[in-house]
Image 1: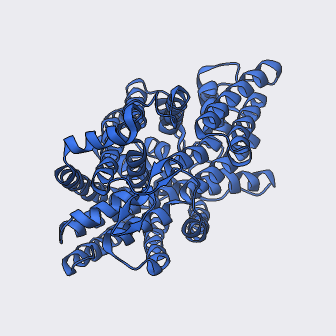
Image 2: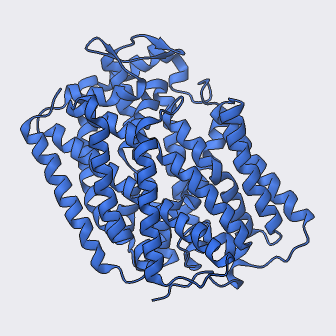
Image 3: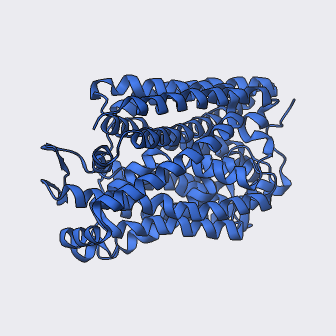
Length: 505
C-alpha cells in the first residue's frame, strides 16, 4: 500500500515543474486585469482546459466517490444535472454572455453596476464568507486522499498539506490568473491521464456486473432511482437544478474564467464543451465509489450507511475510494495517479485562492476606501491589495481547513455553504439582467433572505440539505420580487452604468 521510489520521483518531479512554470506567469502581469482575468485573452481551448481544471480537484473526486459508495447509481442524478445545466448555459449564453459584455472582474462588481455600491459590499461579504467556508474543508479531505494512497503517516498530514498550500500560494500570489491558467493546462493533461487509469483499474478489479449486483443487494431500488432514495427525492433534484444554474453563472471561480475569455461567443463555447467534461467529472468518481463498495463489502453500519473495512480497520465512507486505489494500483501507476490528484488539488486551490481574494480586495476593501473618500488605487496598488488578500485567505485555510470536519456527506456540505450566497446572487443577477423592475431594495432582501434561508435552517434548525437549499432559493426570489414591487427607487439598466473601478495602468 506504500509508495515505491518511482512513485516519489514522479510526484516530486511534477511539483517542481508545476511551481517553476507557474512562476513564469509573473512577467505577463501588466495591470490588474492581467492579474485577475488574464487580460481577457483566453481562447476556446485554453478556456476549456482551465475551467475544467479549476472545478475538478481531489476534493471533487473524494466527495463524488463518497456519494457513489453511499448511494450507488442514484447519485448519478447530481452529475447528470451539473453537466446538462452547464451545456444549456453555454448554448443559450444565460448570464455569462451578458457578464462578458460588461467586462467584469468579479461577480459582486455587477451589483454596483445594476443596484448600488452598498449592495456590492454586502454581496462581496457573503460571497467571501460562503466561498471561504466552502473551500475550508478542501485541505483536510485532500490530505486524507494523499495519506491513504501514498502510505504517508497521518501524523505528517498537517505538514504535507501546509507545504502544498504554500507552493500554491507562491505562484498564485506572484503570477495571478496568468500563472493559474498556465499551470491549469499542464494539470488538466495529467489529471485526465489519472482519471482514465483509475477508471480502468476500478472496473477491471471490481467487475461491472459485480458492481451492479452489489449496489442492488445493498440498497435495492434506492441505489438506482434518486426519487426513491430517502436522501434525495424530487426536492433534491429541483434544488440541484437551481444550484447548478447558479454555480455555472455566478460561482466566482467559474465566472472569472468567463470574464477572461476573448469574447461573449468564446465564453459560450467554453461553457458548452466543458459541460460534457462535467458529466464525467461526477459520474466516473461515483463509479469508483461503487467499485470500492463492491471490493470491500459491507462492514459496520453508521446511520444506515455501510462503512468500509480495510485490513481490519473501519474507515469513513469518504475514504473508501482512496483505500481501494491504495490496494489495486501498482508502482509507477500509483505515482502517476497521485501526481494527477495533486495537479487537481493545486489547480482548484490556486483558482479558489485567487477568486475569493479578488472579491475581498475588489468588492470589500476598495468600496470601503471609496466610501471613506480615499482616492482610487492605481492598478499596481490593486494588485498589491489582491496579493495581501490572497495571503490572508491562505493563512485562514491553513488552520480552518486542516482541523474542521464537515457534518454529513461532504458534497452536501459544500452545496449548502455555496448556497449561502448563491441563492441571493443568482436571483439578483437574473432579475437584474432580465427584469426591468428589479430594484436595490429587492436586491438587499434577496441577498439577506437567501443567506438566512441557507444558514438558519441548516446550522441551527438542522433541516435536511435538500429542504434548506430549496428554501434558500425560494426566499431569495420572494425577497427580490416583493422588495422590487413595493420600492419606488430609480431603476437603471446595467449597461447604462460605468465600471466603479477602472483598469488604470
